[in-house]
Length: 121
Length: 107
Image (tube, rainbow over all chains, first blue to last red; front, top):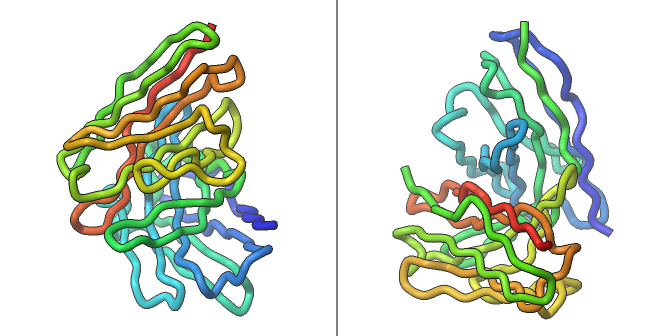
C-alpha cells in the first residue's frame, strides 16, 4: 500500500534552515509528481510546491518562492523540501503528497501524516 | 491571487443533507476537488474531478459543479462525517489553491 513518511521537522530559530524529507513506498515513485502542503496550527491547508517526476518542473506558492526548494531522489524514493530564512509564519505541519495529473490540473491522492515545523526564538 | 471561498461552518442533524459550497472564478474551466480532514489526521480525498468518488468513500458523498460554484453534498450525514472540508483547485499558472475550509457539525 502507498506510504508516505515525513521526517526532519522540529524547533528552529527565525532565520534558520531545515530540510524536510519524505520517504515513499508502495508505488513506483519515479512515475509520479510529488507535492508539499502545509497547515499552520488551527488554520487551513496551503499548497506549497510541486515537482515533476523527473525533476524537470517545479512550482512554488508565492509565499515561499525564493526561500523553499523542492527536490527529489528517485533512486532513494525520497522527496525533500529545503526551507531557508525561516519565519514565524512558516510554523506549520508539513505534509508530503502524491500528485495525480489531469489535463488542466492536478490533485493529491495520498498524503503522509505530516511533520511539525516550529519557528520560534 | 486566485481564491476559493467556502462558508466557515455548516451544521446539520444526523440523517439530514449537508451541502458545502466553494466558489471560484476559474471553476468553469478547472476541476474542483474535496478533502475531508478529521481532527489530528491528514486530509482524505472524498471527491475528485468535480463529481467522482474514490473507492472506499461512502455513496452518501457526492459532488457537482456549475458555473463558478462547486458543491459537496453529504446525503444522510452521519456523526462520523463531522470534520473540516476543503475544496481545492488550480489557478492559471498551475499553482494549487485550497479554500479556507468548512467545519461540518453533525448533531
